[in-house]
Amino acid sequence: MSHRNILVAGALIGALGVMIGAFGAHGLAGLLEAHNRVDTFETAVKYHMYHALALLLTGTLLFHIPAKPLRLAGLFFIIGILIFSGSLYILCLTNISWLGAITPIGGVFLIAGWLSLGHGIFHSWPGKVV
Image (tube, rainbow, N blue to C red):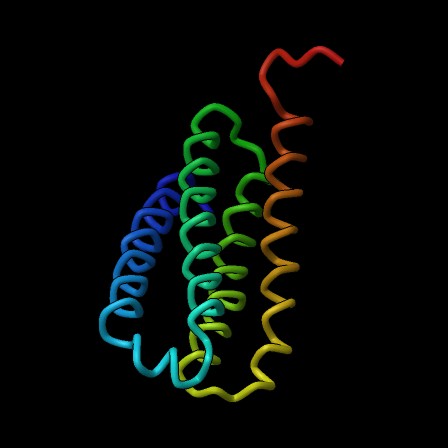
């Protein structure tokens, strides 16, 4: 993924996170309370927004460090958000409990994103001294 695509994805995913969070707080409050999923929904939105910011950081770093691990980090963050937060959103709406089993797969992608980000920074930093 290019730095431009990662930055655009971060901005759009961030906007979507705000919209979903607001909809959950105002339009879904009764459903979330009925399913006892308010905390789950808040966790989904929180991770969604944290990783929208991570995408913006990753895209910005790509201007200075055009390394493949940073591109992979962006891809991993996007996949992780979709699977982690997406599975939790669907769980909250449907109350289908087996969807919680999918969530850790998204978490693995989020972790892979952070590790790829660190790897790219460590091994590709301009003028690094080892």
